[in-house]
Length: 127
Image (cartoon, rainbow, N blue to C red; front, side, top):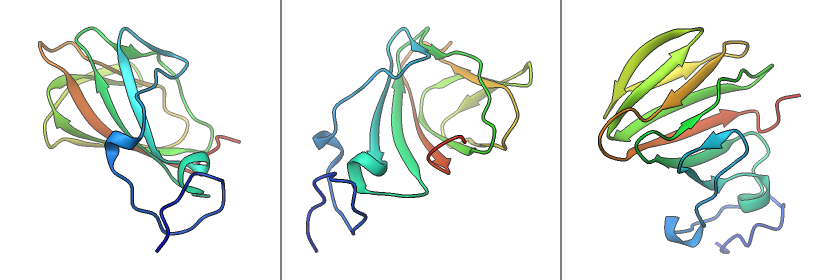
């Protein structure tokens, strides 16, 4: 098995999380950082966007919605607030959130330590 160099062609790959830099994507604020681990440009995936995110206290993503994309958030550490369609729920370690297309949502770290979670989005593009 070859190590994928992120050239856009799908193939099996193994990479360590430290090989991917932290990025702050548009619409993310206050230290809302993500590592895009599996995406078309990193692994050649066609259907999946898989990220690990760490939000510092007070960091957040603005309220938004997706036309066709589904998302899963899996909280690994910390706690924060997940807002879905204007309803706020506290999320913490081991919570798994599913968001179907068309629902407005946001996640905010209103805790006292970093909030770390996995985000899986499919399909990759929100056509």
